Length: 151
Image 1: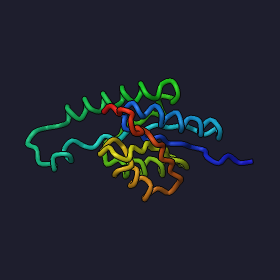
Image 2: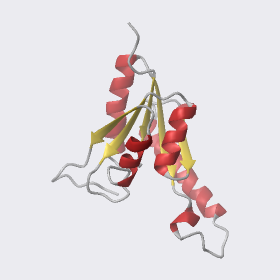
Image 3: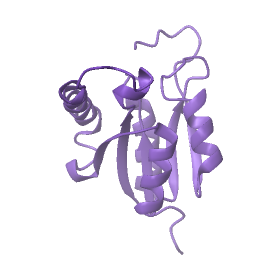
């Protein structure tokens, strides 16, 4: 019998809910003996300000990148190998699709908050992920009512 999924990608926003999203993805990966990758997408700083800033943002972007890698490792270790932890800069849905296609991902797992703006996801990002994906997408419900979601 062939396994349903061979490569599971978890896209996280680095909030405390990321652990729950990873846990659900890990269960599926374990059941299918699938590879498990985790990624976080940083929006480029220039984009947030319309690209119209008269200063070099490289060092700030680098600091954000380092912080994101450190935080991602805290969430992913020891469940996901270092080489399968990825921080990329770009628009989340685009980068998630690109990664999925380049690495033969057949299941993308995202967190769905339903009410938070950019807290990766079912506002803009997971909807975008769902619409452009060439594979299955699982939205894990996080941050239920009555539960404080820390940003």
